[in-house]
Amino acid sequence: MYKETNIRSIVKGISWRVVATTTTIIIVYLFFGRLDLAIAAGLIETVLKVALYWGHEKIWQKIHWGKKRIEPFNLWFTGLPLSGKTTIADKVYTELEKLHIPIERIDSKDIRELVPNIGYSREDRNRHMLRIAHLIKTLQNNSISTVASFVSPYRESRKAIREMVKNNIVVYVKADIETCKARDYKGVYEKAMNGELQNFSGVNDIYEEPQHAEIIVDTDKMSADEAAQVIISYVKKHYVK
Image (cartoon, rainbow, N blue to C red; front, side, top):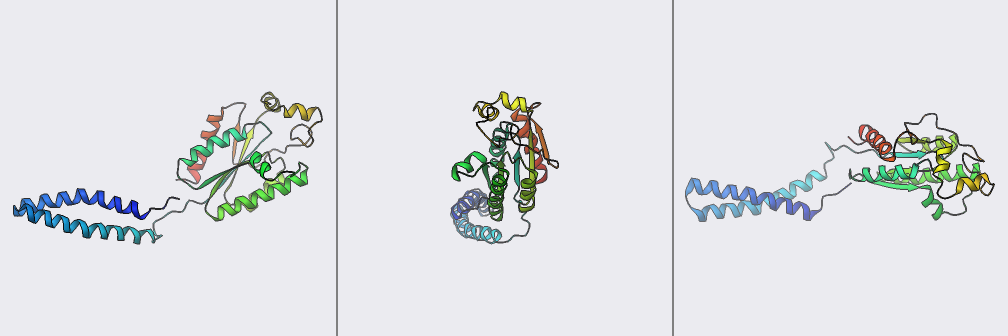
């Protein structure tokens, strides 16, 4: 969240007092016909009310009544490799940033670069998802929402994340395996089919589709922009009102 700084409050007070003081000077002059008296009254009022306005603002900043806290949420993007998770999640994150809410972006590629040699077995992946869930939980404790994109192929790890994380929104980025192969600019599907990559979701390892996803976007039927708008509309309706 953004916090009002002292200098901003002062500048706001001055800009308002310029308008108000001019009005006071005009009124005093019209009643008494003395410009010196009108200017003096205007200057005294300006000094006093700028100080009073600043103090009034500071007092109200400490009062929580009438403020509505935006509960932190987590958008969890799951789907086959190259289904479009990262592209859509990036677009959603960019749009949510414009709403001026505390939010962070977490992507599997970035995390694996930070924590190498994690492994791709079912046990390794489940353990890794628990680390990510703990990271998200820590961010949420500081009122920070998250947009996370991971293949996360196993139901047990997604269930563990849902149990650990508040307001978890599962976004299933659905795509046909052949569509994902056609997008394979990295050649990873080909390597997996040739046996060069093991435990590759959708080829030589299972991908268990979410059974209770809050949002499903089919990238065979809609563009990344269209999918992003569906997700943003959901967030605005349920969390950012």
